[in-house]
Structures are given as structure tokens and as C-alpha cells.
Length: 221
Image (cartoon, rainbow, N blue to C red; front, top):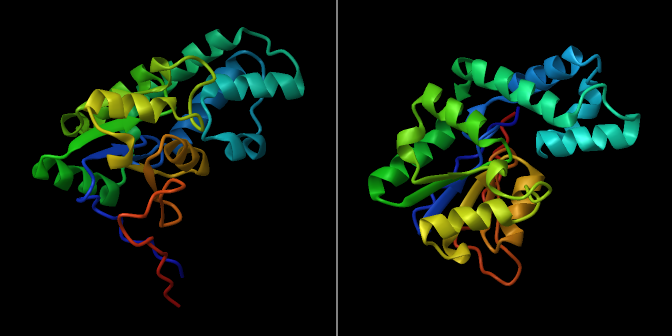
């Protein structure tokens, strides 16, 4: 049986940046159900086998990819996304906080470190989730796909760079916690260290020495 690696506390970094979906909260089912329902309202079907490999990209980019593969949707993408976000906001009370990652944020807040969120979700969706979970008080700033041009969400570095700018932190002094390869790629591209909460791997950008030894997954038979 594989157990989850201990999440590094990031104490030696000036600022910690957290992804939202899948990192601070378990929202996978909420997000899939919301998009599938919004597409069904328009008369289109979202195949879960098609969705899950793409879940880390923004919903607008996902629907653009869907149209490229399957043809135009029966409704404009913006209308479907607006309805999807409404469903996600309504389901915010169902979100489950991922305790070991949230504990890192709470402990860092007590130490006085600067904390931010960098998410591919929209601003209204993350705001609703932060309010529902009570996590809002931990973070100095929140940057989402709503704050960058369309197409510049993760794996592009824009979201994480904007978080660092708002925190008045140098990218090299930031540690990103994310649960996807897309998020890790965005962090490394921004010149930040990145910890993948799913794989237990801590990575440093090219040319930078790791500030912690990489974490590994402990295996228990």
C-alpha cells in the first residue's frame, strides 16, 4: 500500500503559493459534475474518459479543445462556462479541505510567511470555496485564471508570477504546492520551486539548487 508523503513545511522560503483544486480542497467530483451538467443543459455530453486527462487546464480552454475535436457546441462556450461556475459555487459547501496541505498553510501563517493562491479556476469559484471552507483568512492574495489573459493559465507561468508580484516576493524565494504536472510546469517556468502533493516530489527550476531534499513516497506493504 502506498502512503502519502509528508508535505514539506516550506519554512526556508519567503512565500508559499498554493493551487486550489486538488491541493487545498478535494473538488474533483464537484468540478466534473458541474461541467458535465452545464454541457448537458446545452445538449452536449462530457465523456469522463476525455475529461480527466485534461482536468488541470482551465474550463474555457477545455471546451475550446472539445470543439476542436468534436465540433461546435450547441451554445457559446461563455454561456456554458457561466452556468458551470454557478454550479460549482452552489456546491462549495460540499468541498473537503485537504488537511495536511491546509496545515502547512496554517503553520506558515503563524510564522508570518507570505501566502498566496494561484489557481486555474475562476475568481468567483475560488472565492466561494474559500468562504465555505474558512480558509480565506490564511492568504494574502488570490490569483486565478480570471486575472490573466485567456490561454495564459497554467502551464504558462503568468498566474504564479502575478502571485509573487502581489506578495512582493522574488520567484526564486517562492515554493508552489500543486497537484498536477501542469501546475508544476508552470511553477518551474516561473523560476519557482514546486512540490507535487500527489507524487511527493519536490522540484527546483533549472539552474537552481533545491532548498530541501526531494520528498519521496513512502511505501508500506
